[in-house]
Length: 248
Image (cartoon, rainbow, N blue to C red; front, side, top):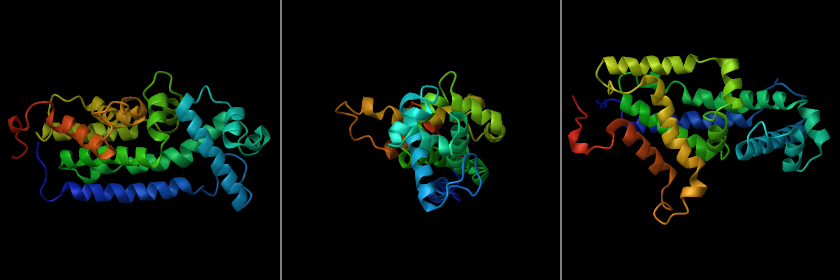
């Protein structure tokens, strides 16, 4: 596999930081018009944000299907009537979360392959780093991904696909297949699995960290180590580094 000298990995890392900061700012600022009752000023906007954050925390801990609006009210320390003032139904709240939280993050993930069209190593490294950065910025992201995206019957995956389709996945697959035809990426890799494999290698360890970090040898494994480990597995496999030729 080749790594372009004109596009160092550090440039990809800088793009990750910039795009993630933009996504975080977008996610923290409620758009002018969204589903649900208007916020009614600064105090109302803060209350609405508090309810969204409480919902995300509960969705990550126990799943969307098992979380009622009444439970969200208890988590936020408000009355059920307050939740219903802003969100009439749980489905409406989920739509708001998709629009105001996941769409900005989805945009932050997009464009990486296009930014490094001839350098799959840099693209995959930047993507792994972005997964980790997002999971560090939003504590709910990794566990919610495990519960609602990769699990059977995940409501979030279903709703996202209904609203936005599979266009981003198709673009990623096309880029992977092009790299394989050009000899820049292992032809034995399955394009439809590579994106999910990289997400699994980064987000699953972060989502399950409270479990495996109890071991004495894993306590010092930080997010950067997880990203590096994921990229090494994807780009080098488990064989000795000397057995792989990374340059043309």
